[in-house]
Length: 323
Image (tube, rainbow, N blue to C red; front, top):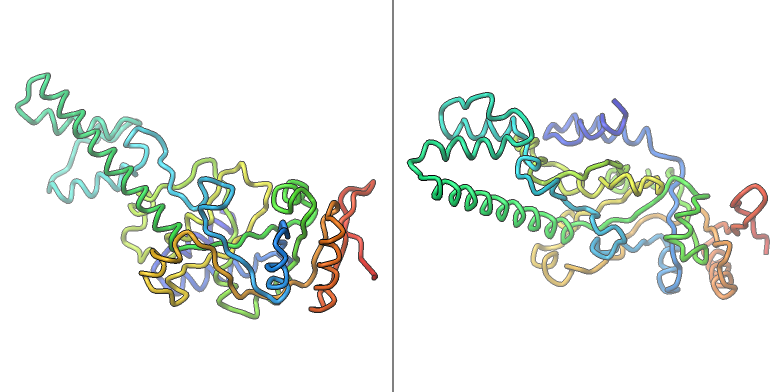
């Protein structure tokens, strides 16, 4: 089991000691540096970031359309539920055991529906009609529940994204305005001075299939759902694995925002958040002179080391700026 898997196993419980162990395990595996790529097209945000603030965008504006989403696995209902948990709950309600063969195979949900319909005095037309009605109703409930979960997650959470790598060509291209922007470096020692920040930073898990809310709730229904929304914020499809990402995940309800604010004026809006000052700033290899001048001035004003990215025979490298 990887340390990330062990972390999640401990973190997603209601046991306070397990959560402490999880946070300690994560702290032991934090990278020494975080890198945050920025387009730097809006200079008013630049000075704020030099001062130690960062902008946490509304999740719906991020470039991954499935960011922090519960994504249904397929149109087949059974693929979105855990059959063992579903069976346990159903048998508790019925008060008797169901045949084992109902829950074998991928079409277990359909077989369970057919089992109950067979107990009714229905002709073939009525049977088919009722089967369709039940299927449509179940799909509708599942889709509405899933959409509602995603809307709540996007309203409640804000994230800031960091990478473990500086010389990441796709990151410079995608998030730093095609090498015309900048990249901030943050020293983990400075972040760890603030326990709240350290506790709210998570590694991203790259998976071949995104989790679903129904499966999560079934698996953890006896827990306190600690980290429920955060769990979805730190899972991304493997397509994004090149980012080597860590995330600062902020729940607005834990930041003294009222419910009516979260689902009212703050909904759809990014927020400024107090972080730590960057230890270095790297100027993109294609950054225009106007941006270079602005960054140089800010770096002198706030005593932040500045370096210039250059294309060399040895790849993309950072060169110190001496003037």
